[in-house]
Length: 157
Image (cartoon, rainbow, N blue to C red; front, side):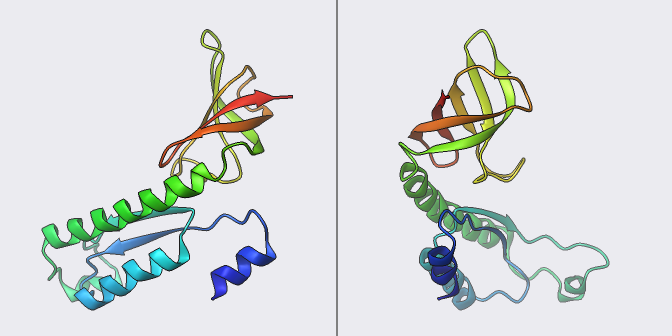
């Protein structure tokens, strides 16, 4: 499989993508195939949106035949699957150290918030760490805890 080969060749590789559920031609079988694909690939980060028709797009002429409830249920099923995968992947980072770009600081609580190379801006989780730095600094953090989307850490020298 391509993803397995990529991960073997590039240690620490992070793979993220986004899918749309409920595209007008999506069948139950196609959705099941997508679900199984996500189970196999185990993306590091995944976004899922329900299809909505947009003017001046190739799909506009296909209509919107899949009920909103079906689209949303499919989206929720994929996101639930991904949350399980994300939690496992994030827990595997506990104890490891990474450079972090500081994007927020709470000086009173001595907490810094930012992201590592694992996180795309504005769409992936954050690292919340004990420490002190300035916004824009790069600092090293050791991961001490994990949730489905966010990591917790401690600034290290």
